[in-house]
Length: 475
Ligand code: ARG
Image (cartoon, rainbow, N blue to C red):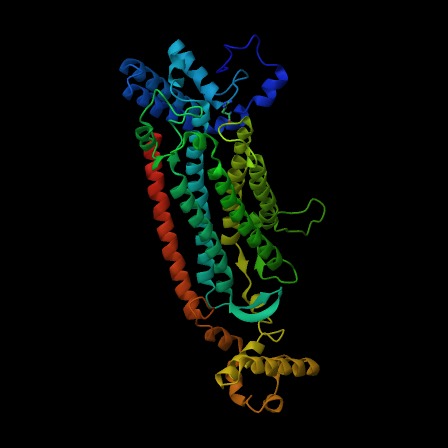
């Protein structure tokens, strides 16, 4: 059903209808559109521009329509331009002319942003919840492997020994920052655009604050022109999704490497790997690779929207219809990817012997020699130089730096006494990293406890927001 036409001598060309139509994708906004409509009807009644009887009839019809949409018995058809016109068609079918009454005092321009914000609040919370579940799974694996030592890498070269749990838990920190950004998104963007009308505000609904509160928004946008053209909330959400996608990609990359024959650090469960159509022996880490691959589209969705917004005149322009598909895509892809990643990690077997093998190789204990000298009051620049010479000698002798004899070490520098040997084990190196962010068992145990507390905090935030939001669902 078209929501306009009075001033036109003829209807739009078929090609224009095809170009203009958004209902195939914006139908996802239908449940939110129904809710916003209900709140708007209440506003019209409060303002005295709609009788209580009419308001009751429309509200009941909207209630019914909401149920039919949920059950899949009401759907858009060929005549609908967008979700808003489809829903009005549904109302008119139930109420006749009265079905068109709720269009008073607002425009699709403020309606569509409101629907979209509600969709995003709902789905951002879902993505945040899935992200927390993934972080929890990672932390559980880390806690189980608390005694596991591993070589730590920089530049993909052995650098210093670490606890493998420290390696795993770093991802949880990144994921929780993503959740934190989503929380921050909600605080900033929980303002309702309703009452803005097409661009100048509404003459018929003077108190949009009440409608906003009914829809669980924290306030009302204060400039109607800005409110109908603001898509910062979309760009911010897409950034949050892209950043999360990049984190998932980096997890994916790590698991892909750990899963190689050469590393053999992790064995993926059969249920979370895939085979090859030609090579019968193959078992591939496709989930990890898809995580890596999909980050490209999450970033594309963000950059696409920013380019659409750049240079756009204020108030509503039809370009803004392009804001929705990237969001639906990012949300739906993340909600597919996150549970698969969680399952992959939950069911993975970490091969301790392989992980620990060669933990001190590549002269990974050289820093311990430098640190030992610093404790003996040698300036670090000198200590670094001396340790470097030890590495060079070990290399010449075809051994690791921690395998040099006492005589070799004393020969390099008289301050390199046999006491240094106490430091020259991966266990000692790890145990010495006692800073609050360090890799010592004590530090890592405390960090895992902090992560658990953070997760509890975010989980209760999500639960309370969802409760507030589902209260609004009943509007
Ligand atoms: N389908 C449109 C969108 O998504 C709804 C708003 C249409 N407004 C207009 N003035 N044509 O942006």
